Image (tube, rainbow, N blue to C red):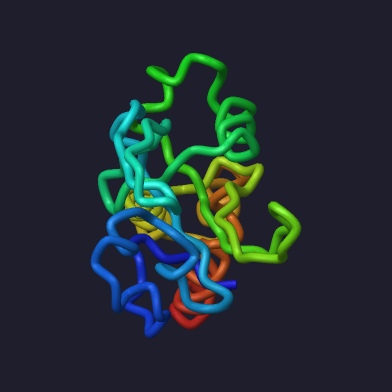
Length: 170
């Protein structure tokens, strides 16, 4: 799995049709990628449905990606992470991935929200700076142990680099 913070440029056929690429979809991710999106707002937006008719749907707007139509599954997942009041979701991040689902009698690829609170790129910079300020192994150990659990896997390699540097300096 690869964590990204901007939708990827893919060669999915949907990207050939401008009206199909205005919303975030599985076509925005390469295989194995998961997108961390920062929520800017939620609301109702008018889109064209499969029959070409206007339809008002709930959408979530992101600072770093196109809007995503909200379905019940993803909405419940976001609510489980940040509470039922969608106004409180603003400024929070979700991690989106593509998976095969059965819908309307067919198997298709759909976006889903991971049941975790992801670190965004700004969070990581802050924690990397904290780790880089460590002057010895004890400080590094204590600093790393006090990091939020959801960022530790992404910062393991940074910690290991600093550890190697500190060991060489001894």
